[in-house]
Length: 212
Image 1 (cartoon, rainbow, N blue to C red):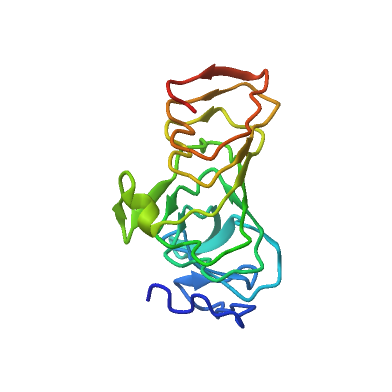
Image 2: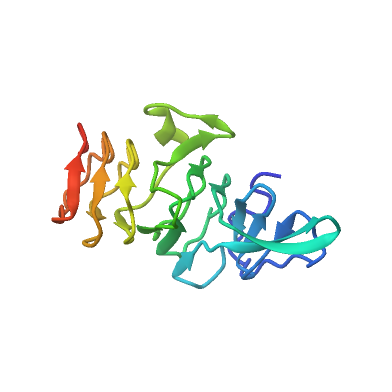
């Protein structure tokens, strides 16, 4: 169930049988629901200071023939990183868009977020949820605390979509890539009320309304 092993400070590794059809643990640090492309749990007691969400292999049968398909993580579940006190930096890919409430609760040192670009996936905004329902306005922040203070976009982006980081109110610094032309959409960084540093490179070709 939701938060079943959350905030367990002594939990350093997570292992699942290779015969399990629903869950996988590709690096023994996180539990992934492979059918829903959802990160369910990160081992809160892991000593690593940085972690990167990577693509994983899914075994599928088509016409009684086994195939391996590479899939990205698109969803971060409730309390997924709860209590990960050692974690300082998280890297996700541009296809990770859904973040459930309290996904990063009690992560006092988690201040840096890097967004890597995967071809065919734009760097769209994040859908902040409350148990599946999309939150609006200030309600988001009541149950979906986002600790990140520094956010870095990796190279290869085409567009930072409308409302991409809207309501990331703890962000103080945004680092944009200096290579490849791209656009910044409307309200992309809207309501980032603590933002005090963001250099706009020459390769930004347009900036939308109320982007900052």
